[in-house]
View 1 (cartoon, rainbow, N blue to C red):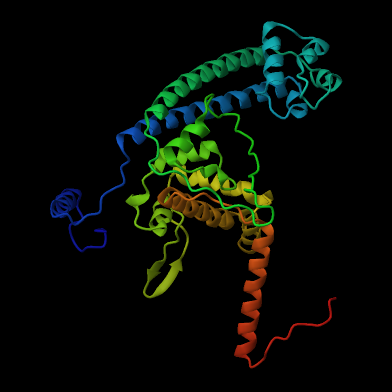
View 2 (cartoon, rainbow, N blue to C red):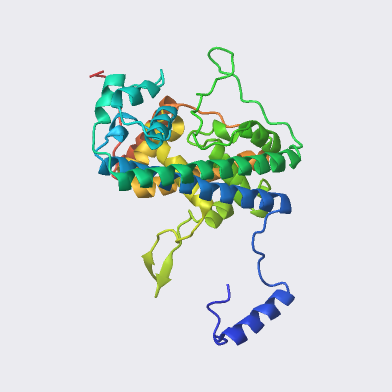
Length: 362
């Protein structure tokens, strides 16, 4: 707010000027969550760093296997699964027979034992085996640290008070008279080992996972970064702008130079962008909207726009305590069709024409 004022450009003079303005109450306050939310944020950010470290360990193990011409990662979709980690532990223990290593295959694994055994035919290099052993030990240590964070996180969540108001129930389906059931979302593999979804619903008063694209870990990130009190932002537009999704017009001499969103390093913005990117194949109202924006604006701008849309939905649910109900792809397509018809009728009227529906069904 004060960067465009003339003069006072030195650090000392500017700090004195800001102190004077703050004394008079002329500066806006920075956002600072409550102590309970700050404690959760510290624990959640530490756990996120451990998740990234675990991913680095898995990548290094994959590289070591590839250097030995062991194509295990091509037959297993996830090396950190039960089958993959059992095989790696056996390799580190000294087993080299592919047939015996394939015996660790879990019943749910899509690859057959013969395929797994064939992928384990390679050269066993001592230096790569040493790297594999060290990375396996690091991965196990990181998993223990994540488990310790889960215990602290569970204790902090249990101390959080429950929401005062009961969440609004979704309206019943007009066709069947029953409440529409949402699709069951697949839980993330890095999700804490306690009922985090139930705790979040108890504390927030609403189930934010009903919004398509938003999962339990995304809700936890939203709560730890923005809190649950939406009164800090007067409107949802202020909330979207605080996250960094609102465009800002750089004007010079009456000419708009650019309208891009400002660059911010926000964990909340990153989480909402990741949630928006999962709507590409979603058979929902938000999925249809994302696909249309993706076709018209491109993938990066569409992700930003849908991230802002998700932020607005979160703001409304937390502030007004209403549950989100998906309207479906068909209703969005019909709404978009009516919008196009109104636009065509307006353009025709501007040129002195009137649109007449065609009597030919073809």
